[in-house]
Image (cartoon, rainbow, N blue to C red; front, side, top):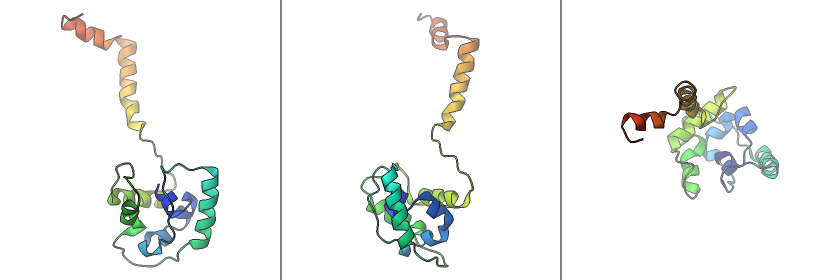
Length: 135
């Protein structure tokens, strides 16, 4: 959503992160929508970012990445994030060579444990209900 709002492709943000940390460098903003990226939007965003890229400046900013400005500008929320979490995520994306984003990954562990129980014991709920005398 943030990239759509800024009109930036991810590659541009990763290539020049110092340009986009300055909140005064925010030019034209766009509708953040739901953050989904379509082919036409990527072409539009790449064209707008190439021409409007602010020059990098040195210094500490009150609102790096214009995170608070972004959250104030959009209607609703950015999936429950706050400005500090958004800044940390942008710093990670800008600095790391590879980032794995998957909100479902932690659920793999309980699924694996459930599979092991099902393969070794069987139906855990039936066993629990039988032990309690309810089945």
